[in-house]
Length: 318
Image (tube, rainbow, N blue to C red; front, side, top):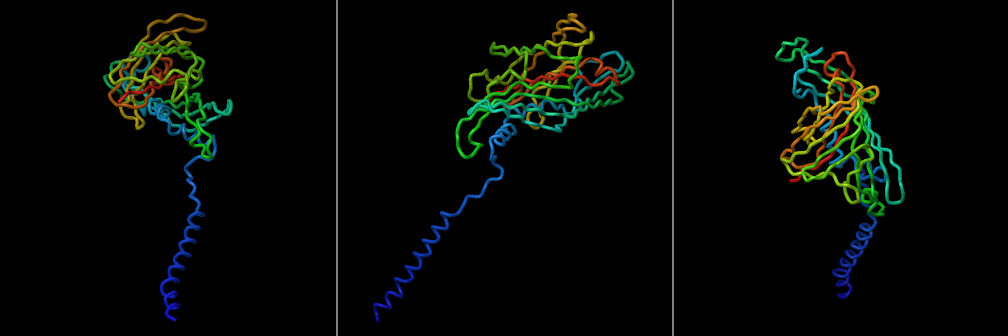
């Protein structure tokens, strides 16, 4: 009797605890980790997320969108008299078309459509010392660039399998035949030169690869940009350089290019413009944006917006 009481008092509780622990362990093994709904489940989804989060790509819009009026660096005595000129851009559509070159490489064409408004603070009075009217001109701009993706792994999680290997320069505008950037030369402070004829085919290394890398600059360094373009108009075009804006749009600067030469060519003129900008002290990814417009766009209150835009990514070292 004493032996039976001992078993009931000590062995049975231990046995029950062991059984409970066994089933609890089995349940733990059967628990499935919750699915992270934010993680892409396809290769295309992974590439789209890479594009959304890549700093060198994201920096384009902060510099393309001037967020309204910016200083106009000189007053021109013609139809209207501008004091400040700038445009505000709103992204309205974005597509990423992907072609798989082989098992380890894919090419994406990123197309962005913007609704823009060109703001011109001006006066109709040639003797005015400040603007007394703001002219608004709506327009649509389409910008494209090429992105090269490289496969680095083969896991069940597409997000871990791909990286951005290289990106091209962005190019776009209003698709006007009257103004067209044909060549861009960038003189870097280390003596290197970028010479670009086709921005969407000029690849800059983002990660691993054999392409030329995105320019890395120190703060306070100067970069000279030379633009060759075709213009259907003899007058000096309105060609500007916007740069330095971070992802929140802070530290944006703008300069107007200086005309170096103009030569008659066919039904228009081949022109060369040049400007130099200096990097600021804030590290990070940026774009230098070249916008070219015929002069009447900012000097005639009724002239429609015609524009061609190229961009150059660069990185300011900490």
